[in-house]
Image (tube, rainbow, N blue to C red; front, side, top):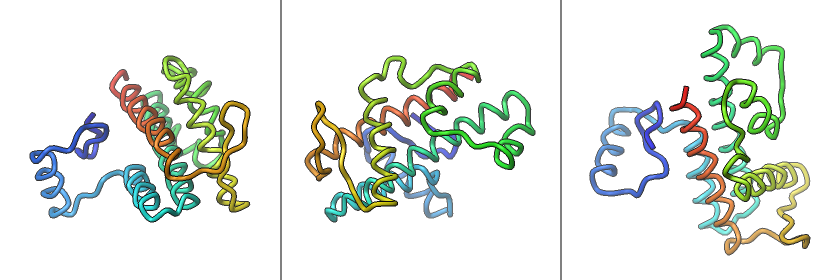
Length: 172
């Protein structure tokens, strides 16, 4: 799916896309910050640094959703994002559930039940990794330590979240 910056997400990397990406980077363009954090998370997994991977992936999700909410608010009235930034705070879970519904979008959980659970678990892990240095999650009622083998499902859930955000944008 093409995002506003012209960089793509959720698409197999072929030689034409790779060349177009290289041209954009050579021209001084950069992927959106959420995609940069996503890539940083991939790098951290390759280095076996799960704590930093979780932090980067959680931030990627938060930034992508925040951009969606800001754009949805701006579509309602141009001054709303600035007011929200200055005076309002909302939780990540509220953003992908009730706030987006109030802005005429579909909650992430609609059609993405498992990915929604994983993204919320990822966001919880991000907080624990940041504040406690812990990277554990619940799987079938059992607490597990995050490792490279089980990290893939969190990337897949993040892909689903990014695609959902793009679909919400396209629907507006």
